Image 1 (cartoon, rainbow, N blue to C red):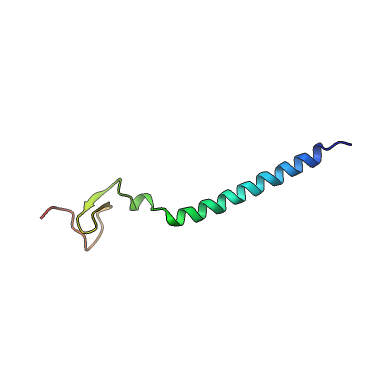
Image 2: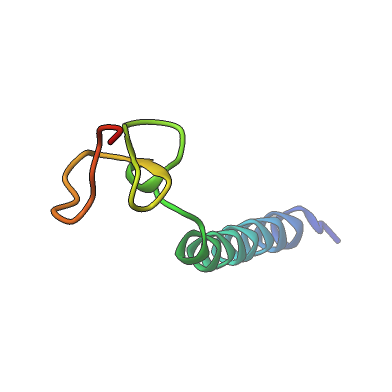
Length: 65
């Protein structure tokens, strides 16, 4: 009896299931992570928030007093 087709189908289903689990896990993770445009690594220093941002905060100030 040849088990090759069964093993191939099982491997395919396992790979698709693993992909779906990874996509679902990354979607949950991205909601909690800060976005790059919201990062402390780039942008102008906003003295109101104490973080770097895009410089578009209407209530923020970007120069030392």
